Amino acid sequence: MLNEMKVFVAAVELQSISAAARSLRLSAAAASHRVLQLEAQLGTRLLNRTTRRLQMTEAGRIFYDHAREVLESVVRAETSVANITGVPFGSLRVTAPLGLGRSVIGPIIPQFVQLHPKIEVRLQLTDHLVDLLSESVDIAVRMATLSDSSFIVRKLAECPRVLCAASCYLDRHGHPTTPEELLDHNCLLLRFPGSTQSHWTLEGEDGPLTLPVRGRFDADDGDVLTDWALQGEGIVLKPYWEVAEHIRNGTLQIVLPDFEPTPVNLVLLYPHRQLLPANVRAFADFLIEKTKMLVEKPELRPVKACV
Image 1: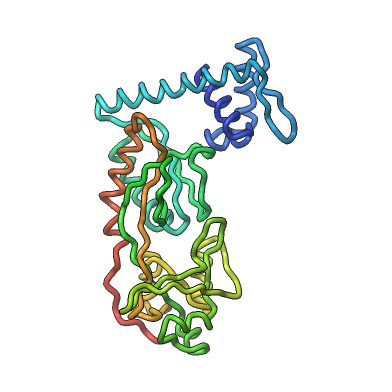
Image 2 (image 1 turned 180 degrees about the vertical axis):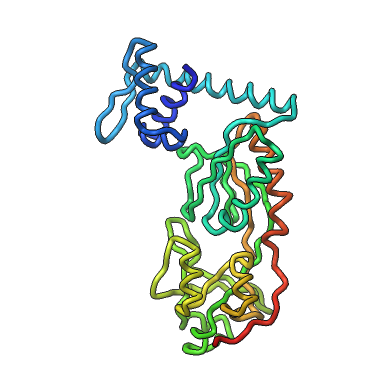
């Protein structure tokens, strides 16, 4: 019955059996079948289903409260055992930005699983801000400064950033020599709900300067911005680790090298819990150990001119 209870609780909290199925890595048909099995075992309907929404019956509301307590007790029991034995286990749902996930987080996850073979990692990559609670995410990796009291925030590393563009763009539109000149350039922006990238902050002799930059087009995928910059479409603000190779081989040039963008914090974010699951703690400790050297400012050779 435990598996059926997991589906039922997830369906209630996500207001969708399909969403519950995705969060638990099941097909929609399998999730729906488990809810039907649970209702059959209990001999009563728990959910009223329509094409648009789920609504708990009176029996469903009563059962939900007890089912959630049972599932939380199971997590506490598993965590207690893992803490005693020193062997973390279980499924771990992780979310990270697309570029960071592809270049930094994804490649080191096999190392983590080799160290902890009883943990299964489910990685979700997106540049959108994921609601950890509604999406049942255990831990998020984000490039931001966060202070939400409902979550635990652990700093992984300081992530230095750089302004860069293709030499063909700079040859056509000019090389900015002051931060204010960025206002006359096509700036390639990462846009999605909650994004703050429409304002770039640069460090100068007189302190930080924030500019409301603009561009003719933007995207919600950071890799698309890099591609546009490589095509000579504008100036882009990027973490060094994301464009270092392009700068080394000369396909991108650093813009305003004397006015570096303020670094962004690379952080871990996870919900407050009375007892932190051992697999979450193990993954957090692993990332803190591994990521700093992967995102720090690299040594760069002088760039080549456009051909």
